[in-house]
Amino acid sequence: MSASAYNITINDLQAPNAPGWHANGKGQGGEDQETEPGTAPGQDWDLEAFTLNGKKLTIYSGYNLLAGNKPYGLGDLFIDTNGDAHWQPGADNHINGKTDNSVFLYDYVVHFTKRSGFSIGDGSYTVYQIDNSKSVVLTETVFKSGSNPWILDTDKSSKDHIKAISSGQLGVTVNNTATLTIDGGTQVTGGTHYMGDLDVSFLPTGDLANGKTIFHITMQCGNDSLVGRVADGGATLTLLGAAMTTLAFLVRRQGKK
Ligand SMILES: [Ca+2]
Ligand SMILES: [Ca+2]
Ligand SMILES: [Ca+2]
Ligand SMILES: [Ca+2]
Image (tube, rainbow, N blue to C red):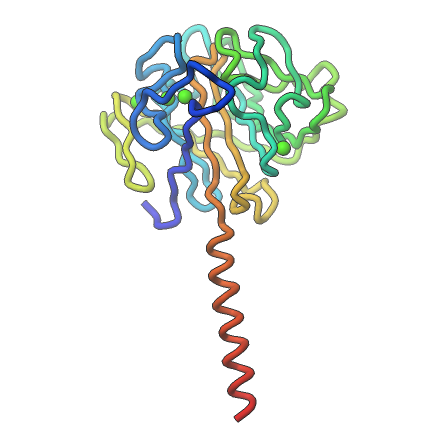
């Protein structure tokens, strides 16, 4: 566990516009051993945590990331980098249809390209930069509107408003330790854990430390919504700035002797 690795999971339930959603899990963000209100509970539907280590994002999950859980597959990973995304429950009150990115304002999507039934195959993906327009069509979840959106629809009107910028593969490993200590000293519990690693170096330099970057993922049913937010790197930069100002002052004083 590196000192630069952080559990970035935040509570997806403490949203002012989402009455009835409440934190009932444990661990950071209240996400471990938690699924959304009124959905099937259990480790095999539990998205547990996001961690960030440098440019490596890891998704911890009791839900089988690659194979899915019959009959519902993993969604795309939605990313906001400018702090305006409507990631909280309530942005879209519909299910089982189409919505669009003028509702959510995400900036990037990691879109899995080898879907077959409820599997995402080997986890291959294309990363798209997406417009905020109505033309960017997204697919809703089947059961929980608060977990929207599920995936990017690359057909329909989307194709002129999305730009492929990168590609890769979600590297998934399995850990059967029931209580697993992860980054930041936090733990995920409940049984088997699937850990999906993703290289997010496609994001512009600086975005990961701007205090605004949000990651969101769910599965087709919307049983669990997992949200992560990268901590503000501004405090570190301010300290560095103060240190350099002091250094410049000392250098000037030395020059006056
Ligand atoms: Ca959960
Ligand atoms: Ca769990
Ligand atoms: Ca945005
Ligand atoms: Ca959740």
